[in-house]
Length: 148
Image 1 (cartoon, helix red, strand yellow):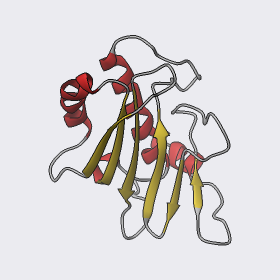
Image 2 (tube, one colour):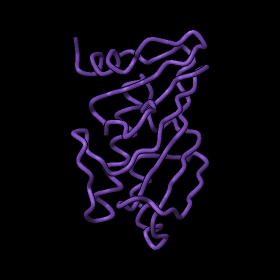
Image 3 (cartoon, helix red, strand yellow):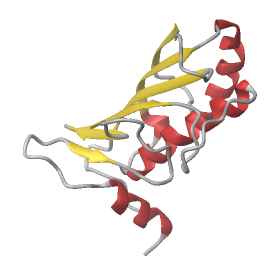
């Protein structure tokens, strides 16, 4: 089994009776509470907010760029585990402790998204000990997860 097949298998947990399928992966930060890293419902992947936490649970508190890249790596990993691709995001929510990081966030953001860019909201937020958190909604393939 290839690494990508194993990651998709890990991320594709049992679908609930209501059609929601939780997604989880050890390749992203573990949830800090009672929530899923992602949920697929009706062909749409909803990604929980990710902070700058490594897959082993370590909070990054250094430079803004380091924190932002970890956030986007986490989102990318959960999307991949679901059989999706973060570049197919249709909506992104960005939460920044300091809006002076907005320009730097935009530069980093362009590394993970391309045109047509998803709609986005950026909000200043009192985050607990870190500079950025991001959530997203991703369109999945109409035929289900892509096969490699």
